[in-house]
Length: 387
Image (cartoon, rainbow, N blue to C red; front, top):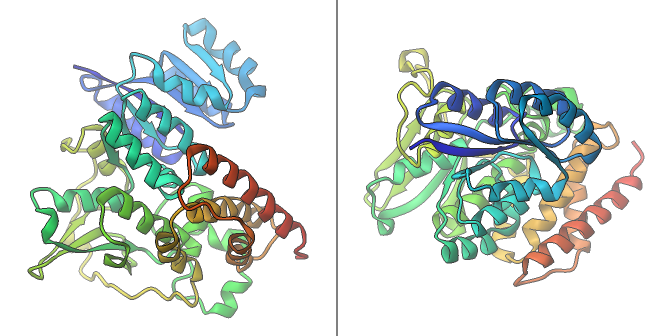
């Protein structure tokens, strides 16, 4: 049976790599829906190659261009945030790959769960913002969720065949980003161009900046807690500059299992699309002789204070992580636009967190409201900063 895939975030790095896999295995997969935010020309190009049943653009002003290009090919088109969620209801969709950026992944993922569609989750913010709610919905619907992030895919692979009560600790590896060796004084004056020079991975601008602040790793700790049900104090980050060990699991007998691979996303994407089965040739094979030295370091939370937000959010629960994510999205956009300094990203997040009301047991509507208010407060804070 050929599996129909809705690729949300088709024009991004994860989306394009997923489409590589789908295209090269037409006996297994079919791209039924391609969705994007604003890159209409890229979406048109991809739709012409992959011929989905439906192409969706979030920016409604771009629908005429999308429709004009794809109508002659018989490809249906739609636009708007609601269309991004509606598209997962198509009966031809068996699995939804959520690879959109940031908070935008929450609504379509929730919709997919309610529609009983399996999910390949590359959007970590879905579980960061509303992990408790998402897990409740998953338990009620029977929908299966497969992690796409390389770190969480690695952990899932290490846990195969193991009993939950033998797991002692999850060790999530981090490259350290472009500023791993920079002193705090130099980091304070780092430019967006500096922060976008990731040493190992080729990613979108938003996630690359999150890697530079190490908030990305804080989010991955939160995501791991919700994915695997491990207590927050038993999940930690380990800096591994080579990005070959994607994560590790330590067991009660002292054994440590690790998943190794090149810094490439084809393997974890294929593992998720295949429902935790292996696809031959998904990724180039790793030659260990090319990596004679693999090193590990403790992260420095003084230079990277965003990392400490993981344990705070997990201990606080409720809407804390939703607030952090919203403030971060606004702050990162401002940094990329040259409106604030690199160090201001953490300050904006912390100040927004301090100013926001807190909801301990939020509903979906609470998450929506907190996200909106946190963005407004973060924007006001940024407007008061003089760069």
